[in-house]
Image 1 (spheres, rainbow, N blue to C red):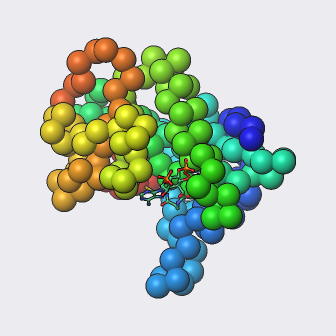
Image 2 (image 1 turned 90 degrees about the vertical axis):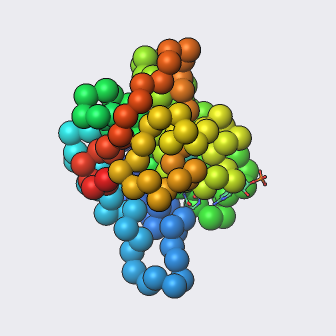
Length: 170
Ligand SMILES: CC(C)(COP(=O)(O)OP(=O)(O)OC[C@H]1O[C@@H](n2cnc3c(N)ncnc32)[C@H](O)[C@@H]1OP(=O)(O)O)[C@@H](O)C(=O)NCCC(=O)NCCS
């Protein structure tokens, strides 16, 4: 498997992977994550080194992105998502490798923490812990323990309310 930064040429293949990964038989049509990604590529909070693709035998099979978000409007953190692996390639560590790659890139860039909204059965194995008890609040407190944070260094985490990149609308 090869991990590298996304380039604009990758975007159609990323869209296909995201579309398949988030497909929901109960909700026909393109999953909302596909349009969200297009908006993220174009927004001010997009940071190219935090958009990473995974390739197996030259085929693009996974993607993860973290974009700039803000705590109380002025403290920069990263917001991770969407992350997707093509269904036929899931369960082989590709999602984990993408999470590790984003964490390493963020640490190397001096970022303080990554937050995400996700499955409580998956992300804690990568060090993510519930963010609300740590004092980092989402716009919707109903996200509860699904809203998680990963500190990237020994600095004390700042406290406040997190706002994702504008296309998320939260
Ligand atoms: C979540 C996702 C990116 C993980 O990618 P992956 O390559 O399958 O992940 P890995 O191989 O590193 O890890 C697989 C493990 O994650 C677990 N896992 C995957 N999705 C999970 C979920 N929704 N809830 C809990 N555990 C999950 C698997 O059960 C497996 O556990 P095991 O190692 O104990 O068997 C992938 O399943 C995916 O694209 N899902 C659909 C889109 C999605 O839900 N994205 C995340 C939104 S928060």
